Amino acid sequence: MQAEVRAKTGTATGPAMWRNSGRDPRSTPHRTPDLTVISGAPQPGAPLAAEPGRPLIIRVGKHLRGVFDRLIASSSLVSNDPVLDVRDFAWTQLLREHWRDIRDEAVAVALRGEASPSLATISPDHRAIAEIDKWRSFFLWGYGYPIDENLVRCPRTRDLVAQIPGLNSAFFSILAPGTHIPEHRGVTKGLITCHLGLIVPRDGDVRMRVHDRTVRWSEGETLVFDDTYNHAVWNDTSGTRVVLLIQFERPLRNPGKWIADAFLNVVRRSAFVQDAVRNIGDWNAAVKQLDV
Image (cartoon, rainbow, N blue to C red; front, side, top):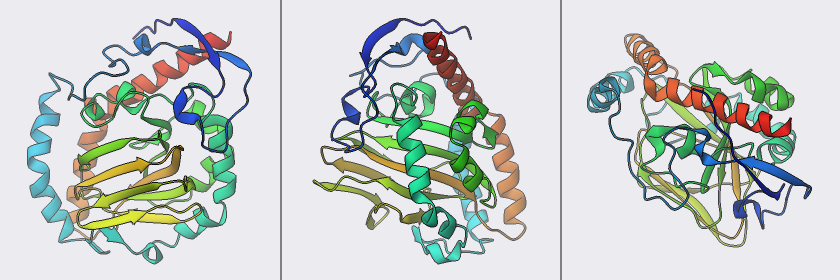
């Protein structure tokens, strides 16, 4: 897809979501790409709505995932609870020890201008839950696909995250002040999610409900949970919440591992992933054009 770009003038603090975070990037003028860089992307203020006409494999897969998830859960080598014990995942200590390095790269790169597109812009399947300019993302890996140009810009985070066993996805998840992400659930029980708190505002309540548990982030701490349980997020503060979001493969015995691997291989080749990876590339290309 050929990206079409229209420039507009702004400040490097970007949209209002970056304000009051306590860590504003520099304030030199810059230009940012218009949302039309991605075909079909909703405009700011558009109502939440699922993308119509999604491929059959995605629609069928959502109906069958309950069957697969039960089979995978029966083979799990770790708890199937909504929130898991971080001590069961020794590598999380590495993230906690170096969280300031990761945060500094997020501030210098992901929070700068329009480097991080709205999740609804790049991922059609998130348009039912993610408002434009409310939930942004800066991807390093997406379903096993490295985003090389982003990895180069965050070398310390890249090297740390590369040590995670079974890494599937890694991105800076950026939530604007006043944002509510409605209840939703993940794609497969074969993946587990980890959040590393990087910027957590303290002038209100920023929280997530996972099934029947309510959890809160702390800077420098990790939270591990099963996103196949319904979960919802609130940022009831005047600041921006930033976490490093990691998805990794659930430790499994067979036959659950065979099932999880086969399901993930299908997902990685589906439009659910391929559209998003292509859109990230188009967005980054548009940003580069504006820097010429």
